[in-house]
Image (tube, rainbow, N blue to C red; front, top):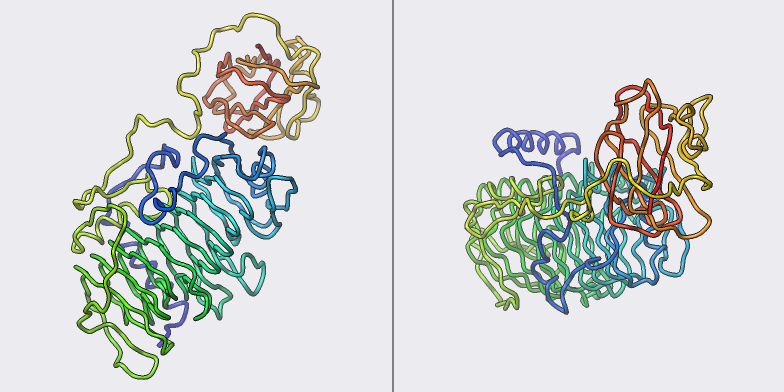
Length: 514
């Protein structure tokens, strides 16, 4: 029997509290998607590399994500989009261009390829806004949270799927992400991770799927059997009613996952599907493997799983559970290499590695979580070989005679005051944070800037980012005013963004140098 939503959510939160109390403290991620490579079936069919080798840009809104896609030279130009903050309906709009096909009510990756979307900094949360992948290939989504995406009620997005793939999708890797709802279909939600209409070569790894009626499907109907070659490993499914996953046709490799509180059914292999189920830990659940809700049989190969307080229904009609003593009824050959953790340590390993903001930790195959190499470049400093600044920079101040604009300015101040060569005038934001830009009518090469604070405000500027306003790429991050050097960049507009301060910042001069 399906438990009331409030009861199911309470139980999940209580379980999460136990994990939090017993798990190790983990740092925020300091590396991009390049830290680890794709695994599982996403390594086949030529592999999955996302935006590797392309430009890296930063986005804090859904519109900025779409803009980054649309600003590429073509729909296949590689790009890595680093996302920080909350992405929702209020800051997501349709953007048009030759290299994109976007929509206002979702993050739309349609008819595109070679893209990485990775959460950085304090995290990326897609709130009530789903990610839709359609007619696309070579996509990486890493270190993001997608929550409460609805198909009914308000607002709606992506058919109620947190991440949905359809129509000739190839090579997708979703990693270290958290996908969650707040109930089932009657509460307006659908699937957390859905694949249909010829979607192949997908891996879901080190992720959390919870508090949902439906974990996800592979194939939308008994006739939609062209999907498959999907790997699920080191994921936590918690407080999910069914579909972990539902597999119609095709092949799935399911290993080292922790399943807790599957309320109605779990891995549902049907319509000729074949699932290899290796060294998973099933706990406090019902009917975790079998063919359910249809007479179109599916098949499974089982190896080394642990069934801890799992109950099984009697076999009758369209209910065909694999237990109480699951045995294999097919054989599935796996074409890629992988290392299995013993099922007994899966709850511990998964609790320390799975989900967004876990530091991109992975298992070494011997039940020991590993932290990515701390020497890997962090997402907020695209080029660790940037030259050291000189103080002050030498040469011609390119800001004199240029234009300027920015975020809201305090009364009595002007954007133009930062490029007039006069230290007695200044620009201030309306609050403690804000941004100021210098711009030119034609592309200009800039390799350093000098931020000079007005008298009486020295030391007010805290943390900051220097951004190529044309592309959204972060050129440098740091704290405190003064000279800032970075790899020479040709652009039309450069932005100094103050992200924290001590008091009210006053920028007297925003000098720029070649």
